[in-house]
Image (cartoon, rainbow, N blue to C red; front, side, top):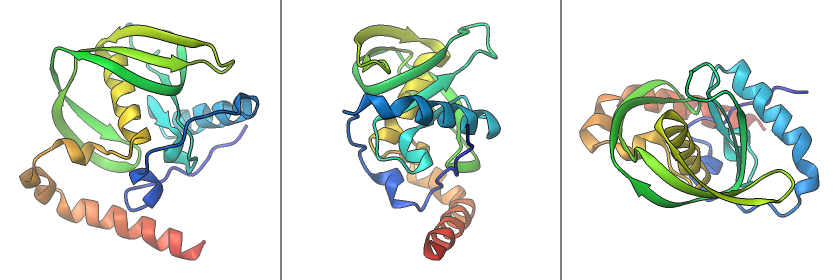
Amino acid sequence: MAVLKVTKLGNPILRKKCNPVDDFSILPKIVEDMFDTMYEEEGIGLAGNQVDLDMNICVVDISHTEEDDVRHVFINGEIVERTGEWLMEEGCLSVPEVRLEFNRAESIRFRYQEMDGTSHEKEYDGLLARVIQHELDHLNGNLIIDHVSKLVRIQHRQQLKEIEQAEKSLLAVK
């Protein structure tokens, strides 16, 4: 399998709502490459647009916790209900070295498809629910910096500017 390049703040695909997956036959290699990339980058979740794919797909693995020991693949996911509130610090592979604290729902009801196209609707809570919300944000064109106040973004302005400039430089070379 292959490790893919992770897109960073400044790449326009991160601000795009990803298209639904309709050809499930192409997914096995993509999913394995996404897991390889996520593990290489030491992440716990990765969305399609984070590896330059305009596809509503994300992979999640929080097996290093006692909370869950399964690798998850969510396709065409949609959060249908959110309950509770949980304040926690988050980082993001697309906004490296920036950690921000903000609230997300403590539990969610989530509708998605598996790699064979089978549809499910399940409730998730805790860290798994939080990671799903983070990845769904990506797939809808949102980043962690969108969840904090303007003041917090100003405090991280230099860091964010450097990430964005580096990514735009890489894009200009393509």
